[in-house]
Length: 141
Image: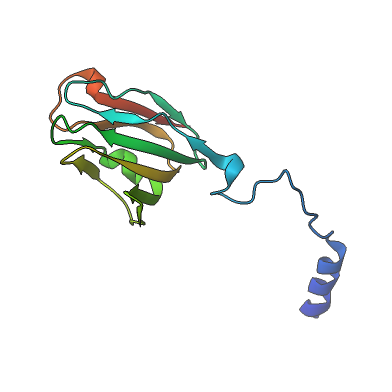
């Protein structure tokens, strides 16, 4: 049996894909993107949340520190459950292989774009903080 004629017949029998203006243009395109509420980092202030994310969806979040102290966010389990597309700091785009934590030594804003990948329950927290409002609970479904 010759494989080429069979493949050619299948290709000709398959209808051409029609252009659909309503179809998403890809994983990083408009209909699949969602902007999360800004996370404000300030000494003694709550982080906000919780977040309920969908696996396979692209998210963008701005994280802003007010400069009230050196403050960071830790969340290795969460950062391993997402694919980080980019981190933008003062117009500089960084495309890392992954993150473990972030830290602000002074006031500023960074934007993180990512795709939620691994379902589960996660947390971003201020290292060393004891209060439950210093944690951001995250669920990926």
